[in-house]
Length: 463
Ligand code: UD1
Ligand code: CA
Image (cartoon, helix red, strand yellow):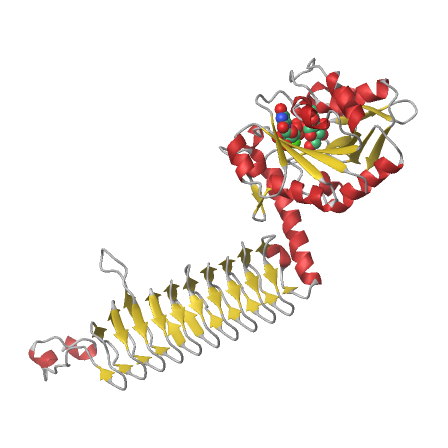
């Protein structure tokens, strides 16, 4: 492909979103709207991408990690005016330039590539993508001349009753010959309902000057969905989520009810992993092969090894080894590093702790700021008392130790390897290797207390 430029318009506020944030920074499947468009353009082989920013310029620019050139539109006077701001960059260039709105995240690299090829092959002044839709509300309408050639676009707000009935709409995706674009932009005015410089008016100018225009009607109009409000945002997110999940399914991942899951773009999943309904996978999460995840898990920025099971649990910024089980109802907070063949059972919370291989933490336990060795058993209801009201302290539990039920480990404290702690103990001092620690008061029996005190309950007490 010859050198192709692209301009993405992202200077508008997006008032219909009713948001404090600029429209193009709203995320879909974990990626800002504008980045979906940039990635599609780059995937189509475009060499130089120019992004026009204006409203909340700094915030918008800070969300863009890709290599692009920025142009600034200080006042938002319309899409045509936005493009005029790129004239210093394009003026003396030759070749083709894609122009897209920044609010069409569903557009694919494949469609753009096809469009650019067709444009260049036919040596046109302008090519645009259109679609025939059931509900053209809000979109610009394509007007065709008596010969059936597309000759201009009428914006919804400027359209008369007859024009409003037209179902062929402007996608906001164009490919221009750069010199034709430069010339037509110079002819724009703002004599319309919105008092804006419409990019769409370039079409009539090119047509009247004898330029060759092609309107490609796209069958898959899903790709053109423009996001103007939250309803359209949700509709687009559904499509992107489905695309992501289908990609994983094609790579060998089973999803039981795909539509019930949300998987962000940056997540990776190995083959033969099974994802049960209600699972949300976010950020840089990577799940290895043959795992079982869900139902009802939320996992963010976490690495999970092969053959591991996670059921009904929440995990963030953590690492989990192979052949481990987590849940149901476990909560792993940032910095949890869990080894292989570990069991983290129900109602266990772990925070910023290392858990060695083959250790079992089966139920109702809080582990915070701890280093637990290998093959340790924590009974039910163990609490790592890591916070003294001022600072967080560390607890170390050595390999092969056994901590009985309902033990409090008052940190900082160390339990040496191969030791036992009796149930119900409150441990404040180091437990040496090979020893048993008991730290609870002895049981007292007061004989016949119930009868002497007249405290018998149930049937006999009626007498
Ligand atoms: C635009 C088209 C319409 C088309 C629709 C497709 C025009 C005049 N209309 O309408 O024909 O059917 O897209 O989705 O082009 N922007 C700027 N600066 C501005 C105004 C807008 O950069 O001064 C940017 C916005 O950030 C946005 C894009 O241009 O990303 C489109 O603007 P928007 O107001 O959403 O245009 P539509 O009314 O949807
Ligand atoms: Ca729009």
